[in-house]
Structure formats: structure tokens, C-alpha cells
Length: 433
Ligand SMILES: NC(=O)c1ccc[n+]([C@@H]2O[C@H](COP(=O)([O-])OP(=O)(O)OC[C@H]3O[C@@H](n4cnc5c(N)ncnc54)[C@H](O)[C@@H]3O)[C@@H](O)[C@H]2O)c1
Image 1 (tube, protein in one colour):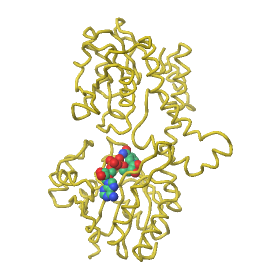
Image 2 (cartoon, protein in one colour):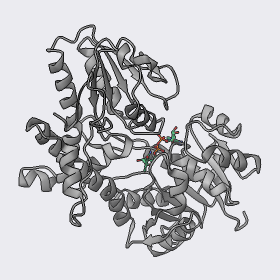
Image 3 (tube, protein in one colour):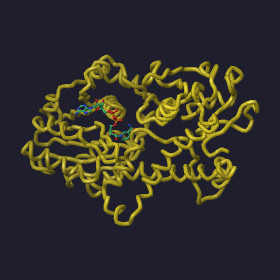
Image 4 (cartoon, protein in one colour):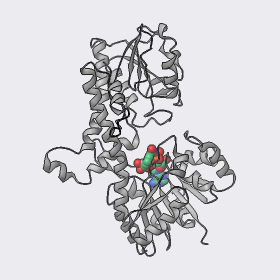
């Protein structure tokens, strides 16, 4: 094989496909290696399996220029010299990292590795995993680690919906299992654009990934608890936080919400805590980020309790429209969505539940109908805003159809309902009395 760069990206999900497309449009030959053959077919037909801003056109260009091809055949790795892992990892019910997806991938690639290959992990991992994976690959392939086989970790830090832009612009942190692996991985990460930050080793890079979301979660958890205190004391948390932040250089408190969920923000705090469980057990209380994660999750329970209380704990047959089935605004990803969780909880209490979501594709989720426009509020007893899609914000500034509701009640989970909302409507919400 020549020295020409040929990159294989394993996993064509929310991270892997934008990575593949971004590299291919830079003129690099990329193979997207994906277990799901229907996804491969879609990609090879230039159809994106999910929506990501700016990806459709770039995917079309990359496939039609012959720079990107998708396959489910692992033997393709024999023709590549850089292999990037973008497969998913999970958490178990009791909050332990579940990386069972990794070993089968390691076993599948090792027969095809050659001297000089770089294996770069973007997959979120517990601290220390990259070195363990490197050792396994080295043993299985008979290639000396950091001499013949280079292995490194570079955390993926983009947010869904802005992946294409952020892949170009965000700083890239890189840590190898040894100095040669670091150098090689930095060369590859430079291709994307943005600054490359080399750290001492792969464990430090793994920690950086877990710091990102655990820190964000800690701040959101703080706001969740401020919300819990506020409405109980008849205070609007949004007003208080905005005033506390205003022109005061030492505050940057996030506004509260009914839920901050999704794939990474949900699991990463648990991955970080799992790195040193003895700290939490010996001192007798959990990490700040796990307390924050639970405080965030509790806002969904809080909303449920307040809604049931409003219906005097007799919600049977009442119709609730949950506005937002995705885990956040303007994306079509419904994994770990707090809106879906709330829908299930209210459904279990006998409420008739339907979704209003202009972004999600399809007409039902787990047997619950999904409507794409506000017409669905006709006959409803309550509308619950669970994500701030721009269409909801637009509707909230000019509400229509309220008079068609059976009962004009809104639960505002994201502070999108202003003070000038029609007084005929009862409004309550996260952090709002
Ligand atoms: N989604 C995000 O916002 C985000 C942000 C930062 C980091 N991450 C991390 O990036 C990784 C990927 O996340 P994602 O959201 O893209 O996941 P995803 O579930 O959307 O995609 C993973 C893809 O990999 C495929 N796959 C799984 N095992 C495979 C294997 N052995 N060989 C080939 N294909 C395989 C799956 O079929 C799937 O299409 C995760 O570790 C996640 O923690 C995700």
C-alpha cells in the first residue's frame, strides 16, 4: 500500500458520519465501516440516515466524487492506514460504564492491522481504556505498541446539530499511548481544522472528555436545584438568575429547564465517577457531578408531580400534549429524551399523551402519536414544553389555538412563555410558581 492517507471510520452514527464526510470533502479517501447494512446503503446512495446541519450536501459531494464509500466488511481495514473508532458506548441501569461494544470491534480489526497503522479512538471511554485497547491490539496483531502500531484517544466534543461546523473549528485534544502515537494522531486531527492540544497521554485525553460534560452537568444541576427552591418560595427562577447574572462579572448561571438529557450528558458523569469509586464510598457522599445529574433528572419527576397535583391526582382521560420528543432543540435524536420519559410516566397514570414535535421524523414513538404542528393542541387539557425548538418559541410569542384546548394550561419547561402570554391560560413551569 502507498503512503497515501486512507482512513476508515468505524461507526456511521451521529459522530462517525460527520467525521467521515468532513474528511472526505477535504479530498481524503474515507471508508465508513458500519455494521448496519441499511445505513451503508443509504450513505452509498448519498442519503443521510439522520439530519445534521450542512451534512446532506457535503455527503452528496463526497460520495459522488468517489471519496467516501460505506461498507460492513471489516477486511477493508487492510487497505487503510488510519482507523478511527466512532462506535457508541453505554451505561448500565445502575450507572456503570458499559463498553461491551468495544471488544468485538477490537477483535474484528486486529487481523487486518499492519505496521504503521494509527488507531484513533473518538468513542467515549472510561479512563485507562485506550491503553488497555492498545495492548490488546498489539498482542493480537503482533505489532509493537507505539513503534509499529500507534494508538491514541481524541475526545469528540461537538454537539449534535452543529457537528459539521464544530468539527472544523473546535480545539482538538489528543493523547497517545506513547509519544509516537501522539505525534501521528496530532497530524491526523490537524486535518479537520481548529487548534490541536497535545496532552501527556491517552488517559489525560480520556479525562478531558469526561470533564466537558460532567462540568456542564454540574452547572445545570445547580440551576435545577435553584429552580426547585424558587417556585416553592413563590419566586420565578428565570427572573432571579437573570438579575443575578446581569452585569455581574463573577456569575454565569445557566437558566433552569425541565430536562437536560441525551446520549453524552447523561452517561459521561457516571463514566467520570467510575474512575475512582473508592473516593465516594470512603467519604460517604457522591461526586458533585452525580448529585447534579440526579438534580437534573429530578426536574422531570418534579414536573410530573406538579402536573398530577394540578389535576388533583386524578388525570385519567386528560389529554396532555408533550411539546418536544427529542432530547434537545433542533435535532432529530430521541435517545435518552426526557420528553419521552415524561410521556411514559403520565401515560402510566392514565393520561392520554401525544407529542408535538416539528423536527422528529415519523408519526409515532413507542405507540405514542407524533404531530408536526400546533393543530394537535385542540382538545388538550395541558401542553408541556420539554425542549425549546425554535418553532415552539415562535408559537409562544404568538400563540394560536389556545381557545381550542379543553382546558388552557401550559407547563413551561424551558422558560419560553413570556409575561405577556394571554391571561386566559394558566401557566406553570420549571422554576416558575
Ligand atoms: N452523539 C453525540 O452528541 C456525541 C458527542 C460527543 C461524543 N460522542 C461519543 O461518540 C461515540 C459515538 O456516538 P454516536 O452518537 O455517533 O453513536 P451512534 O449510536 O449514533 O452511532 C454508532 C454507530 O456505530 C455502529 N456500530 C456499533 N458497533 C460497531 C462495530 N463494531 N462496527 C461498525 N459499526 C458499529 C452502530 O451501528 C451505529 O451506527 C460515543 O462513544 C459517544 O459517547 C457522542
